[in-house]
Image (cartoon, rainbow, N blue to C red; front, side, top):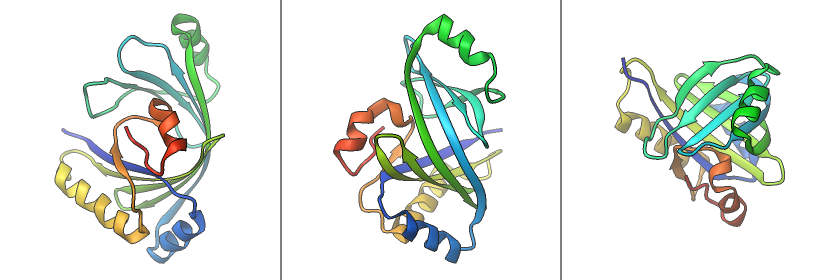
Amino acid sequence: MRNINIEIKSKFENHEKVRKTLKSLHAEYIGIDFQTETYFNVKNGSLKLREGNIENKLVYQDIDEPQSILLYHTQKNSLLKDILAKSYGIYEIIEKHREVYRIKNVYFYIDFVSNEGNFIGIEAQGRNNSHTKEELEELCQSYIQTFGISQWEYVQNSYTDKLDQLTNSNLYAA
């Protein structure tokens, strides 16, 4: 059983255009997630605790691996954050407002990241060998064209990894 996620992110100011396009495509509106992502000091990779209205999980990302590893589904305001903070120390905290939409196996994120600005994310998910990496990349590419995104990059990591690049260019670079 193999799961693959292909995700792109881009700085994108015209969120109203994105909403109108998603509505015309009959995307399902999932909701608004106010997320706090706490990153912990680890020697290799990234350890992130996401706490939100919709998603609450602990994720590890190895620097050399393209896929994140979901370690644990948690509850908002659990003791896990305090335990990890005492064990590893906090590297950074990112707060964001995320609108979530879905068309079949593709999720769309309209993000406002505190002090950083507006972004769009497209995440094509393949579960249980349902899609190849190439098929998921093609799906992302078709939506990149639909939204008219001119500068983007497939991402493997999160906002904190290259925060300075987020504000200094139109491109989110992983």
